[in-house]
Image (cartoon, helix red, strand yellow):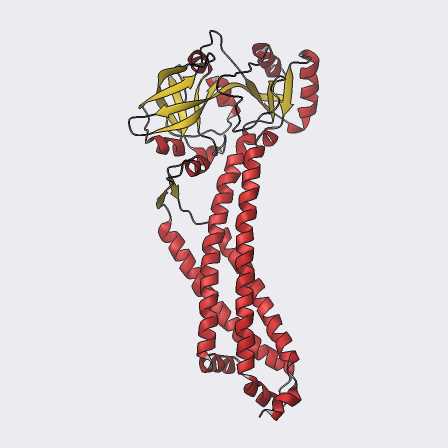
Length: 410
């Protein structure tokens, strides 16, 4: 049977060449497309992982909503009332593992080489360190002085900044004026290992006292408190305790709910790319079905001879299906090899993201191409779907042929 299959493939090499080219192109672009999908999904998955820094977010009741990217205007700052008492209350709770008060403001950062908008996050360095379990510094050290800052390594790439460099920062004050100061980059956080904060937004960690002074406040301002629980299931009980101790002061939200913008972007991105992949799958199936139809119609004489020799239909299905299987496996493997080779050769290559939204989304001026093994098995599954569909189509087409009519054509 195998020899006959190979003989028929060589005999009808033009048809199988067209079919093979279609399969190779399909698998190659599918491989690359699914790899891009995996890369984007991974980036956005990390982007929404702000929730990993805590189990509960507390902010002022006057603030109606909280979002990773949404700040209530450059001039407006809604301070958290009695935040020092709240922090001490939380730290005395047996259910709380770590507490971190924060203040966030949009700012303009520039180094000697580049400039970009960034969100300054004022933190209590020691409390923030406790919140970021398993933190890892790629370079430098943790914040120790008031005029020191930490950024993620991708964001340091955007600024072309190195540890020890002086960064200039500008922030709109509470009175609407622009206030400027300087920071020393004391450390670069290894974002991949930490998987904290949002890759969608550019964050720079600075001391609370520094950012409060920069916005023109004589007192230390706090606009939100992040809480990490020993058992996230105790969240409801802790909220009830806070409401009893501080009635009417605060609103509460799960950090994963606060990242709804990023979650929406992630879902839409996956939907769009999967839709493109689905359309490509349908297009290839339609094209391959047309080639199969043309191939079987052009081989009516050959099929009639098989009928005249008394060959059962199931053997003919195995024969023609085997031809498709061999051709698709060989060409599919070639397409996968080409896709893997191209992706691996591009691994680590920087593609410049000249559009600012792309820089903000991926947190880097240069997007690094990476190879995701998940694209291999996903491509194999979709290739199998096309193969099974084509074999069933060939089987249906063979059943539609009238043996008597074929015999009269001999």
